Length: 469
Image (cartoon, rainbow, N blue to C red; front, side):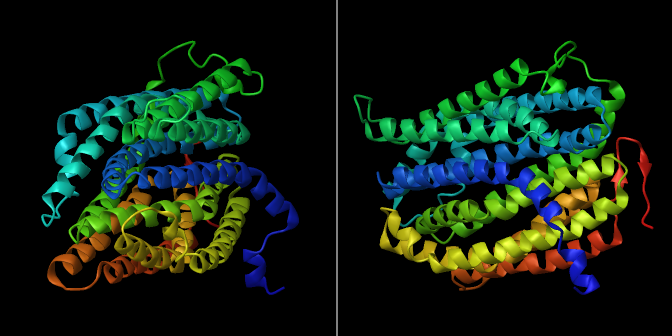
């Protein structure tokens, strides 16, 4: 085998190690996104306006979810390296940090959505050709959003624990809790949306109640099991013996983690802004982008999960001062992620026309959604490449670089391009969507240079940089 190819292809032991980490994450994410797809379908069957209202509300909730993800991920860089160094007290401190950050974000998001929810939903309802549809969509969107606020705190707590468990090598418990939660969501969606088995028919409100209930179930399973099996999960023993976090740890995590939190927040706001720009082309676009995003999220769980696995594996290598191993694993993980995305992308291309037919929406929405799904499928290898690069750079705590690579790229290039093409050209929304997605090719080249230079190689828990040999 040529030396360059050998650099990208691992041994059986390597793939066995990667699969042991990534399969539980894939299973959890796949089931979650599959149930989200079913949730999408169930709401879609009660009307296009209901579907669009829920889609807009979920776009706003998505910003909160990614802000929480950014907060726990920033501290999680330390968790993985503390684990690699065998420092359980450091793991506890980073877990407490995640909990405080997540709950603070929950309070902020609840206040924002209660005060400005109506104005935020209206940003997506710019189609003045049918005022009645706009009013109905706004009504359903606010119904769903206000109930979903009850699920924000348990989501933040569950994510804080789940990320700590994954970073310390326990991926099965978050997977099992996630599986149970999504089935609770699915069952109560059926009962409460349509009013089955004596339950009231609540429509979009029923969908929100089912989701909130599933959040509490997931949180309860993870928290109770973790603390009742503290011997298996040593960070849980004494986690709340003190509520304080050493000042130096808070400082280090904040300095390293804040760019990641801001990155996830601004990146998710960027995605929300892009969807708002697309929505200027009509309400059909709101529904179609929701369908394509849900389908893409389901099919992309393979390479998104590979990014999470790369962060854990490479982060633990760096924490253990295994620099050469970390570099070797990084290239093999990138190659493996792209290879998976090619197979998944081809599969999605083959069914891009059939999937929208499952939705009981307007024919124009189905047609547009099919085209957007096809674009997503074709660009999937580039997405996978960028995603794995991002997580590898992040694993060494270089959050300032990841901020520029991810969020900076979105706001400096993607959003201005979409805005200009939407406002100053007659291009179809499909072509605009393709142009915006194609920018990932440029982003991938930038990431390749950063990974090759080794700017990410840094042991943050020992405080010493490790230079390339």
